[in-house]
Length: 123
Image (cartoon, rainbow, N blue to C red):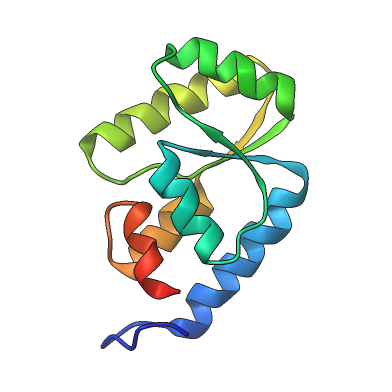
């Protein structure tokens, strides 16, 4: 059950989660860390995850390109996350990976949070 918040569109949020689960069937979800992955799993996202680590952005992009030709970027919407997302998207596209960063951005905006980890409060 979701937390009731003023101006929170529970139906739209659940619809985005369903879309994310559907898109993730043939894609890899890229998150910054274990807590982000855990939050998404708590929300019912059953997918292959790739956690960004201490590897370079390019090495991470190469690893993802070997896993899947489609990627869903779900990175934080803070300054660091936005920069990381832009770089990762560019490298992945250079390697022929189709990248969707919109669904993650929409989830964060709808929930009015900046971090993927914060989404866990909606489960």
